[in-house]
Image 1 (cartoon, rainbow, N blue to C red):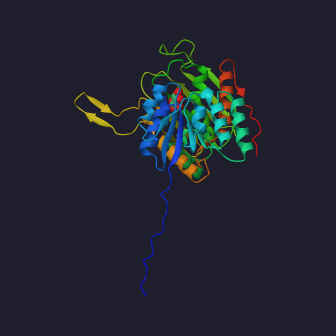
Image 2 (image 1 turned 90 degrees about the vertical axis):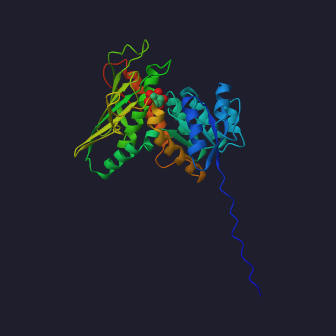
Image 3 (image 1 turned 180 degrees about the horizontal axis):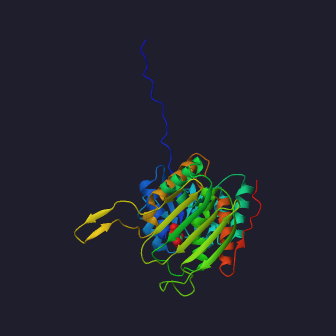
Length: 351
Ligand code: ISE
């Protein structure tokens, strides 16, 4: 009797998660590139942008992808398993709700919405669906420095957190950037950082406009200072300055009862060179190179969560985080025209 060789078990190669991308301006195009080149287990299948030409250009960088005319078509497409939204903030509510309705996981760039009511609609819709679908693009949660600071805080080595001092500077704000965007688009990152690091809600916020730089457009309060107080009494300062004409700087310092720690200092390579008579390092022009590793890690974690059916990665911000941030943004914006602090009110969290 001869032994018949047993054939190796046939396992089908794991399918890539097919991602539909809505909005391929600066951030969306960056995500298309990252998914196509650096993300394992995913590919971009469908793209839309309100400028067809921009969509075609992005599609040319993503092998096998096609362009459709509207966000609705992206969400409904049979060859889209999950949706990445990088359109302007005012469209997020509607597009995230459509993805939930279609039963597709969604990674939505911040902010979740331009007011807390719209953001809360998303929280309720996701809750009513009985599943989790929504991840929010607060990429700093995946930044190595942020993760290290959070670990230090959780290990207790810094003691009780007393102060969180943040600086957020951009070289140049895009055209049309106003005080609302300064809060909902820029400060929203530090607002999310508060719940990421301190794990407690903000109860009040004060916003103080400084003398504005001559580089800011008429009406923009640039720089401005935000002062938050959390439920336990920790104070958070946030210096926002979006037309520095220098570079992209995001720093976070945690002052605790046993020590302090800072992340985000530009302490990469330092060069001394006679030619040009220079000593020093370099600064990132904007958020894409500064946070490239964080964006990569965030999108990879999302794809992994979609593939295993959990849909939202453990470190990721959720729809609730997006709502809570919007509630603080609303108070921060109101505080610009008020002398003193404005209280933050939060709706019930559905359980
Ligand atoms: C932009 O939308 C971002 O998310 C950047 O991280 C932030 O620095 C910038 O101010 C926003 O406009």
